[in-house]
Image (cartoon, rainbow, N blue to C red; front, side):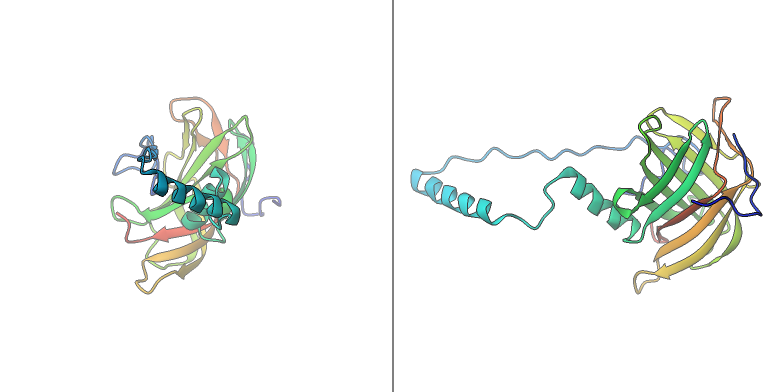
Length: 231
């Protein structure tokens, strides 16, 4: 991505919003639950019926399937559902977590919902970066964002979570980061679900929670989904 624009000060240094307390935007997320499907052991039938099943199985094996049969393909489809086909996140991170991020819908996980106190919304983007940084999540809380509103310089609270190491970096207040919402497009007739595009920029690094490091996010471009009816 290009250099930050002139107005930005460069600093060197499904819905899971992550381990957050109900009234907070920057606390440790809840542990994600893993659900495993168990295959039932087939019952034994008579010889004739077993032969028929064998023939059917052989024919089905020759025809193939249009459904994705790999974890990677299935994960890609889930991501597109959570982020929309145009979902994306692009940013350069500096400091304790240094990475170039250029995620598309097939590798990106998105969430968007109202904040717990009823004011504004929270957006969450997650994915995997280089091996040394692992999986990270970025949560953007925008208290002044209204239903179907676009505009510039919404004050924002931002949290970055290095999920593999359990490290948290978060703005202490709303004076550090601003978000421009460039587009909100309705996805249904109810007017609750929207695709949302925008740009975040932070003038100072995000300090580490319970640590002495920091992460800088000079500029972050995103496209995802928001559901105002989500609880």
